[in-house]
Figure 1 (cartoon, rainbow, N blue to C red):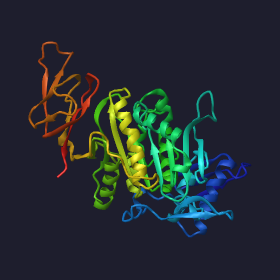
Figure 2 (figure 1 turned 135 degrees about the vertical axis):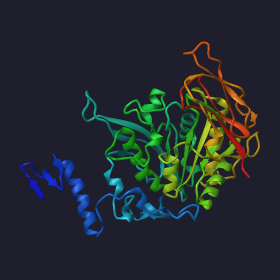
Figure 3 (figure 1 turned 90 degrees about the horizontal axis):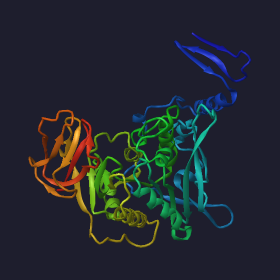
Figure 4 (figure 1 turned 30 degrees about the vertical axis):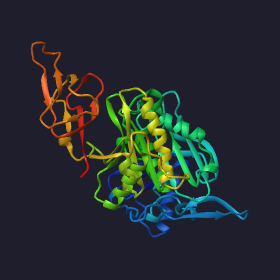
Length: 431
């Protein structure tokens, strides 16, 4: 049964269909969605949003897509990637305009040449501001013909090296130095960055566990959806700068995921080697699927992350690695002239955390006393540290042991930990 009642709403209505009740209250909100559906139907496509698993992946066989130049009648105009050359929206080639579902609005021209600063305006309805928004800073630097790279930091607000490195890059990089386009979000999860917290103070979510996002979801989910459907489809490469934040301290590293596509993984490793942190690491994460790095991988965008220090502070050593590393990646991609520069630590050491046996998890709440300093060589079965239970004064400290040989790549930063927290992560050399 289906019943439509206009009831004077002029474009809105009450719809009862298959036991579902849908109320479209405002013409100016309903009409664009109905228009998108009708356009999809005219193309012969199923207008319903398809599940992520049905979306075809980008071809991983070529490192970067072709690049064309747009001629506006006055010589070679601003460069564009092949996705933009035909003025299509991301998702159109799949028969569904995913990007049109996003309520986020970009107050910046992604496609023109030069250097521009603008904002992503994300809706946020509050008790004191029903039509409120959050403005997320963005910078675009574009010139000539070349690939597009998306550089992000502040995915977690308590990770500082990447934020400062990208602020300095945005301030110092000039269009004349660039062949291609550099998109910079130095504080991508702006509310968390402003609060200095890992999770959003608005919805309590971890942005880096919200991908591919949801245009009808909470603040972090809406932002993740925009990045996944608008920004990643523009890009040939992506780098998301992280550190250990408040909870962890990590040997400075460029990080990629272990993926089944060997060719893609090698391209990611090559970009990581160019970054030239002391360690290039392939990581089996506890929950990698909803991350920005995994979202880029699903779209065939060559992607890289980093882990640069942590413990709730900004390390000048890690900051220097981040600043040099980002410019090295731009050289590797051909956006900047020259070859990547090797730092004083020499070439990166390729390592891996292949599975969860390389993690040491706290079996209960307590105070963690580490046995070894960060970066130490450790052996399986050796004491990783002692866990003290303040609730039981007469109970001896519990000794935890390493599950693998290797290098102490990550350690718990605060003394206090909870059951299930990783207190140590071991990396081993790649075969």
